[in-house]
Amino acid sequence: MKKMKEGMSKNIARKTPSISKVNTYKDFPLFSFIELNINEICNRKCPFCPRVNPEKYPNQNIHMSVGTAEKIAEQLVAIDFKGIVNISGTGEPLLTKYVPKIIEIFGSKGLHIEIVTNGDVLKRKKGTDLIKQMYSCGLSQLVVSMYDGPHQVEEFRNIFSSCQISDKYYSLRDRWYDESENYGLLYTNRAGNLKNDAKYSKNACYYTAYAMYVDYNGDVLLCCQDMYNRTVKFGNVHSENLIDIWHDKKLNEYRQLLIGGSRNLSPCNNCNANGRIFGKEHKVAWEELDDN
Image (cartoon, rainbow, N blue to C red; front, side, top):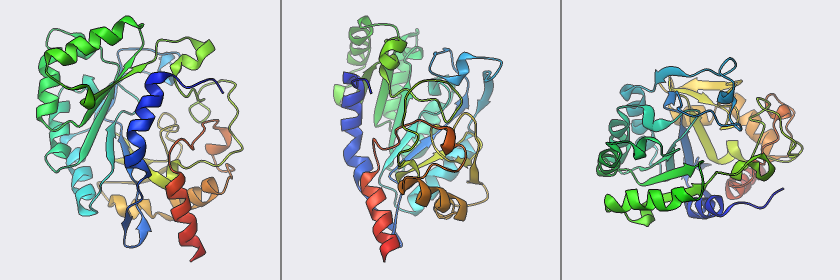
């Protein structure tokens, strides 16, 4: 495994305290991280993303509705969620024109809300206006993945400085590397959607122990690696509550197998993601629950 890049290491260290804290709901371990895929469109075609092949994974002008975001936020408040709400997914979040409204839905309820972006929209004519609006709506952290080169570090620092945003509230990730350096990320085959040589397929995976993943239409998916294939769906926030889906029988089956070291079920049997960067504390909590 290649050495982790500085931007990634810092971002993981920043998130670890929040994700590692195991809160409970009715005596069961509760997820501490929820990722939202709010659209199906991106202005880039990165080689490590299935969207690099438009025939296989084309851009679609599809966005999460305000109503779906409100459903998710209400359900998180109902279980006293204290973790991270992360807007990332399979597209570029800032291409959703009403993204400030989505931020406000979560921020106004005191939820910690983050966005991961390639930053291109921020460099446009009204980019600084958007930055100010997002933070005023309650954005907790903006994570910028920089793909063009080291010169972007100063470029983005100057942009945030002009908006009077402290570096405490944004993160810059160096992602301008080529395939020989895994593009500066934890390069995976996206649960079998891409091809690469990383070997993790026989190890335990903790995604289902600590995290939930919600698609633009409210479907709850298996994990961030399967967000492109959508092989498994466990329910939808419009017909079920997140906490009930968290205890879904099929999801529990995946959870028990994965934290126990078995990747026999699809799409896990085709996935080479590490799956253990976060979640050790949740894994232990689930095991202790089973022992009792």
